Image 1 (cartoon, rainbow, N blue to C red):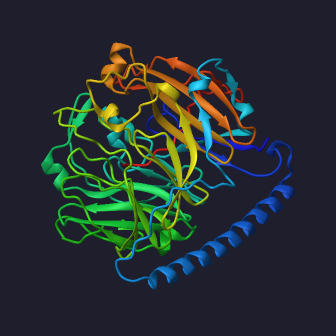
Image 2: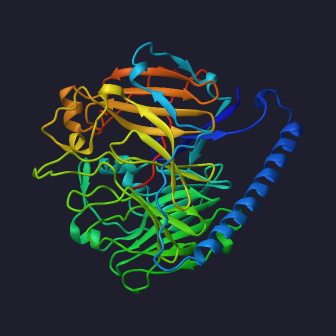
Image 3: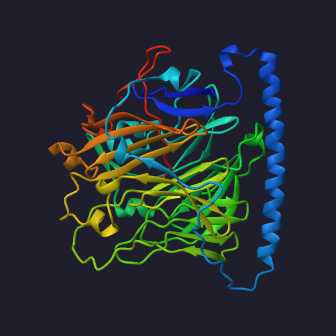
Length: 468
């Protein structure tokens, strides 16, 4: 079995809640590998990564040169064809709703490592349950750990958890009250700071928003060891009318929807192309995905093949937020209320990689998913999806996930692990009631049936979230 390590990152100000990050390593079991062998192995892997990076850079240069020669206004035709050498893997969720398994952590990972993060400058926001979904948005780079504050700040730590510096300073204002917080339109219009953050090409990428100046930028910050000295700080605030208060380089200036707090996240396809996956809009028709050059030219458009049709009711269910993640430098996407996860191959190909087969229990159309008059209590809805080099970690729910379904008892959660090497799927649990926090009454999928047999500490299901 290919060993993995399991790393828990623990904020100093809330020890009872753990954030989980998974690291994949290659070769033999670490417990049986001496240090010299491991050092040689790491060197070999670094050399291979260097070669891969050179090949990638050459391919991207060729693509850039080819695109530069195209006539103005040229668009590639979208291609969603199957890769015949690697057809999509069907994850048979409907057929695995029985025989749940209790699994020990040692069956999946080689060891557990704990990192306790020091307090960062924005840690006061942990007091407010309104920020519950944002507390532990973290990214582990090659040399550093980064956290994204709900207030719009990004903070850098070393791999031992020591605070190093602020990468971006956010200024989201709010009115606090017991158990929550409220943000008004005036406060939103004064916002400056980071709105989304992700890891690509060994760099931290974040979307910087300056609402008073009506400017939005995609920023890149190099994670190399000396980055804190080499990066340029562009000081700015509402008062000085400067446009950026963050470290790094401006990759692109972005157009902003003035009515929205956050624009669609601009994901890098390669070093010269961006992709946007707009959230579905009740009033306007949107595409599934747009691919543009860094200069702003649209190169390809992937249509929404399941758009909202003839929906005129005043109320509707919120969409799930789909799935967006990178694996080995390739962007993966799942549209909201859809069962297919694609790989994006620039500039115009979406290759289906996984199909979540919910059978007759799946939602059949966008209209069915958003219509509040259609009962979903017996329908299965994807919730979270994490892919590593070895495993898929999948959470789905029965019924629409919201506070009312949690209160009335119709909301249930299920979890599965798919072993990509052995092509096996194990149900960890099926149709379990939500865990409800006694502190703030927030609900979530319960963490059960996975035992930490390394040291007995609580196990937290791994998830991968991109800020929306």
